[in-house]
Amino acid sequence: MFRMSEKPLISANEIRERVATLAREITAAYDYDILLSALTGAYMFTADLSRELANAHSDKAVQKKVVFIKASSYGDSTESSGKLQVRGLEKVDLKGKRILMVDDIADTGTTLLGLCKMLKEGGAQEVRTCVLLNKQERREVDITADFVGFEIANEFVVGYGLDYANDYRFLPDIWTLQETN
Ligand code: 5GP
Ligand code: MG
Image 1: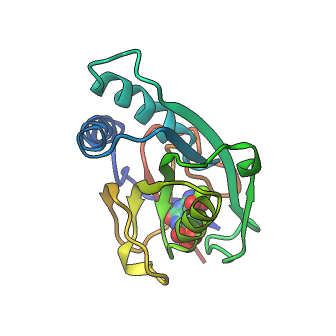
Image 2 (image 1 turned 120 degrees about the vertical axis):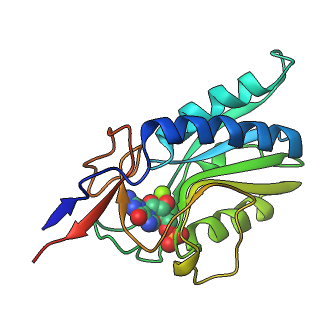
C-alpha cells in the first residue's frame, strides 16, 4: 500500500514558474528543430513547456515540431525494469535534425541514455535532453540531462503527469508516495 505525502513536494505554482524559466534557458542555449517528448509521464510537462517555449520566442512563426513517442519500461512497479521499449520513433525523420528530448524524470538514467543512443543512430545531428525532475543519487549510467527543472532526492514521486499504475497523473502538484506496511 502507498500513501501520499501530507503536502506537495513541489507545488503547481513552483512548477509554473520553473517551467517558464526553463523555457527561457532552453531558448537562449539551443536552437532545436524537434521537441521530442516521451509519453506518458512527460505529457503535462510537455504541454506547459511547449507553450512557454513559444512565449520565449520573439518570432512566433518559428518552425519547431512537437512529436510524441512512447517510451516505457515494463510493469507497474516503482522501480524501472531497465528494459526500454520505444514506439513511434520509426515515423520521425531524424536525419540532420537537432532534437530536444523531453522526459519527465531521470532516475537511473537508462531511459534517457537509451533514447539518446537511438536518436543518434537514427541520424540526429544533435541531441540535448530536458527533464522536469532529476534524481542524481539514483543514477546508474553515465548521462547528464542538459536542462533540469528540479533536483529531487531519492523518493518516488507522482502527479503532474507522473503516475503509479496510471493513478495520480492528473494532479497539478508533485507529491511523494510513501510505502505503508
Ligand atoms: P530511468 O530509466 O531513468 O531509471 O527511469 C525513467 C522512468 O522511470 C521515468 O520516465 C518514469 O517513467 C519512471 N520513474 C522513475 N522515477 C520515478 C518516480 O519517482 N515516479 C514516477 N511516477 N515514475 C518514475
Ligand atoms: Mg517515462
